[in-house]
Length: 273
View 1: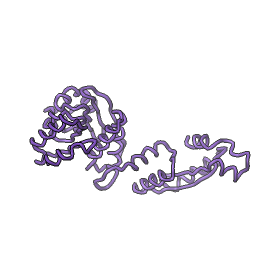
View 2 (view 1 turned 45 degrees about the vertical axis):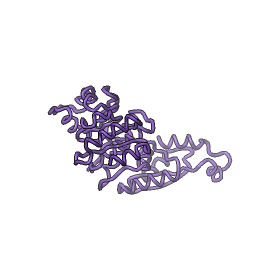
View 3 (view 1 turned 30 degrees about the vertical axis):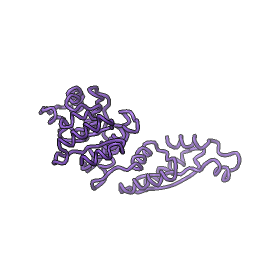
View 4 (view 1 turned 90 degrees about the vertical axis):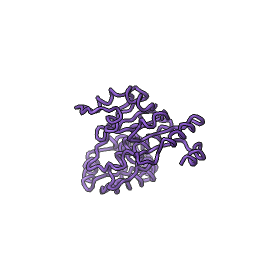
């Protein structure tokens, strides 16, 4: 293991250590990591039940859950509000881990993130019915690491990681969150899909969730009550309604050179509302 690290240390943008304390990562390996880090600094992320074991590495990012925090700090507190309690632990967590960023995951309560000893961001977890939590922490820390080395700020890093973990938890088996699934989630929030490829990916995500998709289309140049009734009826036929909208050239061919009255971007904005 040590020889592999020495030969490949500079080949990566980040080093993510997932440690289950099963005897794989030993003191000689940590010492080798520390020596390599002194020569060529790398972004080191650690997810471990024994974070203090890696204190000498001064990692860039660590991700304990609530139970791991209480074990690390040797406290047995059961507060009414875990979020507020964890927010008060920044200095202690920094001292015990030496990490630049500490992300404390709190399952349904989201996560609390510190930059060194300073509370920086709190992320709320999207609701997930019947969550499968196995692998959610791995998805969270992987996404956060990737976002960090892509120069994202802490709020964006945290929101991306929280969302990716929620997507993974929606799946029946232990699973990851792909980049297209993450894009699809945010497309849902934005309502407007920008390309055919994104539409295909979004539809695949809906089908994976067992949802029935209904599609319709129109010009929607002058929106009136008939449109509203028609769209509501269409939506009743399934779980998700996808609406295609004719572009301006198409409307001119159908309705003549004086149409549309409202250009495509305006029609999209009105229909989204």
